[in-house]
Each structure stands twice: as structure tokens, then as C-alpha cells.
Length: 272
Image (cartoon, rainbow, N blue to C red; front, side):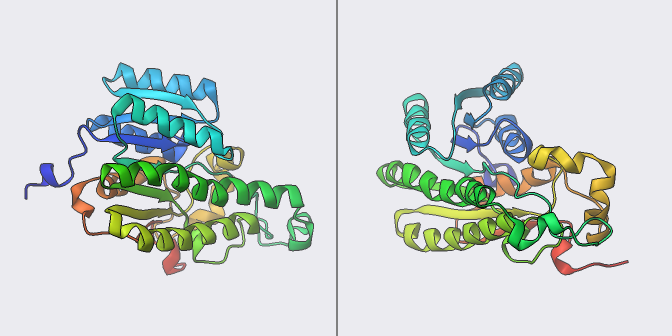
């Protein structure tokens, strides 16, 4: 098979949650630049409108829906809108998520009492789990009936390396939420394989996005993460486009229940 056929996503109907900025926007750009038909869902209507306008200006077939992924009705609505517009959903990027705040150590590895386990507010814990984990479950509930009806599809979830490693600079609520996501992806992949629905995850390390107030846009905030990375870098959203195209295309036809790590080697440990 030729490489252009293997990684072809042209004409696919693609839904992306959290698709107006950061990693989700990178997914949208990768799909648009390669001819997919896209529904971008995002909670921020202004950012969403700007994203749709920009993608259309570059020739993409794209629609947008304002969606709060913690609301089941919103997820049902955007799935229905995507099917009404494109007739099916070939690929869904379940991507929306939020930060759990900084971890229990500062950049110089001193303790932060206000970030200790016993100081985490119930409201923060609940909001992070609701947005990062429960919304994934609800997204699947909205998507799976349509994918079963059409004979299959791909669901690609944005996880994190925090799903499988402990963290000192990342909040505990975030770590717990992503651990749940990683195992849910495996469980869903097992159940849905019979229906030709492939379920996989992309697990980035630190990425420069707006998450957490965009703190990794500041060079000082990036330093501890750069030190922990053997490549001494923090990723940009563009670094995730290759994994997105692979999992959305025929190249990954026999891949399900997998987690593709894109972290510059962070999970290998620190080096020189």
C-alpha cells in the first residue's frame, strides 16, 4: 500500500471536542489540511467562531457547535448535528479537558502547603474529574450508538503521561482523572472491538497550550518540565498531529486499546 493511501483521511467525517484551541485545534488543523470534514465543538463561542473562520479560509469543510462536555444534552446535540451535516461520524477526538492546578512542589522543589493533598478543595476535585473523566464516558455514550449503526468508527481520546506516572508539578486531581481515562480507553476498546469501533488514546507529556491559564507559555514555568525531558523541550500542539493522523487513518486499522505516548522521552526518566 502506498503511503498516501495508508494515511488518507480525505472525506472522513470528524468530530473534535475542545477543538478550538491547543491540542484539539492541532487535531482540527491536521484533519482539515488533509481533506477531512470537521465538526469542531468547544465551550468558548468566540474562540470557536474564530477557529471555524480560519479553517474555512484555508478551504476546509468545517462546522462549529458550542458545547459544554460536562452536559450530556450538549454531547447528544453535537453528535446529532454532526450526523445531520455529514451523514456519519468516522472519527471522534474526545479531547476536551482542564488542568488540576500545580503539583505539591514548586519549580525549585520546595513544598507548597496550599497544594498539599489535604488542601485540595472538593470543588476543584469534582470539576476536574467531571470534565476530564466523566465527560469521556458521556461522550462515548453519545457516540457509540451512531458508530454501531454505521458499522464502525474510531474514537481517539486525549489522555496524558500523567495517567501512568506520578507527578510533582501536576495536581493530583488531574493525575487521577487521566489514570481513569487510560483504563476506560482499554475497557471500551475491549467491549467495542466486536462492532469495528477502534478506541485509542494519545498521551502527551507537557504541551504549551492555554490549559492551566497557559502557564507553560512562560519560559520560567517550562524550566522544570524541560529539565525532566531528555530532549529538554516542551511539546507544541503540532507535535501531536502525526499521532492523530495515524490513529484516524487506515494505517492503524488493527490497533485498538493502545496509548501512543508523545512526550520527548519524559517517561524514560531524566538524562543529561
